Length: 181
Ligand code: AMP
Image (cartoon, rainbow, N blue to C red; front, side, top):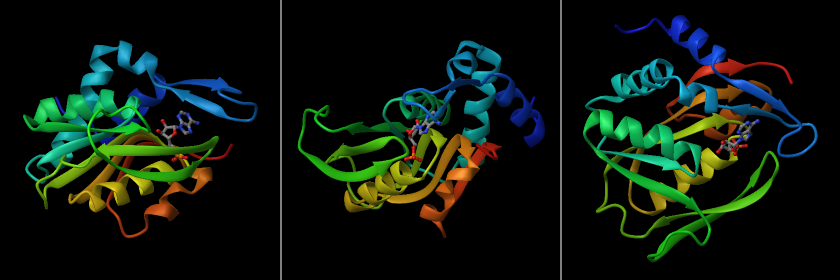
């Protein structure tokens, strides 16, 4: 049975765990492992994303590492393929690469050069939208690699970090919005 938006939000919220000062002082880490361990909650999240995007995408792209968990499950639910965006140096083939700033540090991400024939409709998935740097960089990376990115999905949005401002004009959906820090 499909849940209403607020039922899903309550379910996700009840399965998130705040870890203060991880990975560095001042950051409250949103730990999704309790949600993953609950098959009902995990399934509800995956079906919610899949149902919203069904028939509108050709591939799902997940951002390492937690975006792999949700992205691959959504792709499987929809019967379509999954493509990983990985941290620098992890992919074995030739890659496109982009560097960007994070809430805590900076990073480079990569995708295999031959991931797309060209023009595939792609959904980008991660667990948390924080400053939006990762999602914006991944979006640009995918388009440079030839995909047409139709949207971004994350379970949790940290509103106070204004990630949406990095994604203005783009289709962004998050299930739980956390305000204040
Ligand atoms: P950002 O680029 O700042 O939007 O950060 C998003 C990426 O960092 C995602 O891949 C998240 O998994 C991770 N991340 C950033 N902040 C947090 C947080 N407070 N709790 C959990 N994950 C986070």
